[in-house]
Length: 284
Image (cartoon, rainbow, N blue to C red):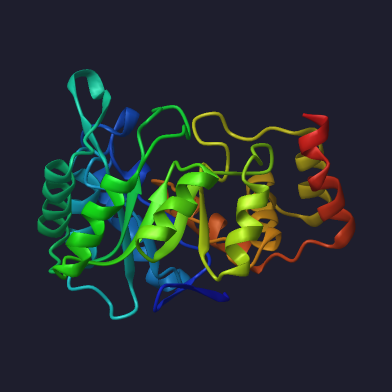
């Protein structure tokens, strides 16, 4: 499993997203707590040393599970979290983006993960909850840079950001990763991925398998059948071959599914399969 850098931290390109460890709608406790802990404890055996989480998952649920399952943490484990939102009644998502709210969120993550410094903190922008939208982010990134200066954050990333916001953030502080929605059929960030790759900055797709609406394509199923893999494994392998700066964080609450996802890192897609998969975007 090859690696890529998050700043000065090397991670294997197949990581894990912890969002699904909480309850329905990313709210409340998991349906099966022991299975959730087993998933986390299986990561090291699969060579996964990059976990994506947030204290607003649950809230607090995934971070507390990570701490219970893995603390004290392995020296090579990199935990990436995100801040910028809070949870309201009925599992609603609400912006929490003032400097005071961002600092409080950093301390929540530190406490619930049992850390003195966070490896990477993604600023989750909320100008539009449903997707990236333009807006000035100087105050957001400046607040994180101050927390970095104080030693609470090692590296900064941005999430749900437009290309212009990424450039603005990079003008304020070093940015080690961008986390946006991207997959076989949602490819609005193609140019941004290539721009970041030239500068050695990681791109981390969320919803790499379609999120709450799993990817479905006759072409994807056909390629999977030809290569003896599942459609979701093919979708993950395509992302890994799309660009060397892409890091994957597929989520699951099942050990069996986790192992299937990890196996996708060993798949090599032949050129004809890649050509067919690239065509999904035009045939969708």
